[in-house]
Image 1 (tube, rainbow, N blue to C red):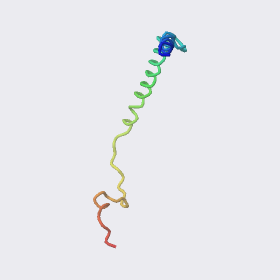
Image 2 (image 1 turned 120 degrees about the horizontal axis):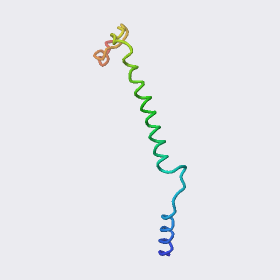
Image 3 (image 1 turned 120 degrees about the vertical axis):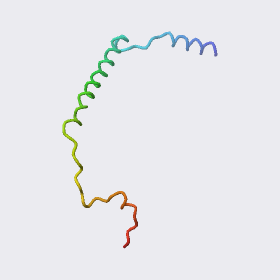
Image 4 (image 1 turned 90 degrees about the horizontal axis):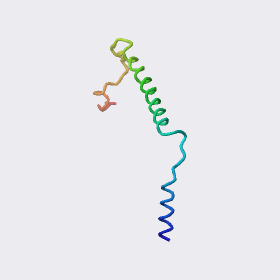
Length: 74
């Protein structure tokens, strides 16, 4: 039994799995995909730099962090 198991494992190890394309082609496709993603990422880096920074709008109804934890005296 052990020898038949070992024979089956060795024969399965020698068989190559079928692939879509040769390894260099798959590598180039994956590399190209990452380059496109890199280009998209770099093209959006200027979105935050389009406008000058401005102060936040003052909201009189906003609860300040210091007031949030105080007990309400109702």
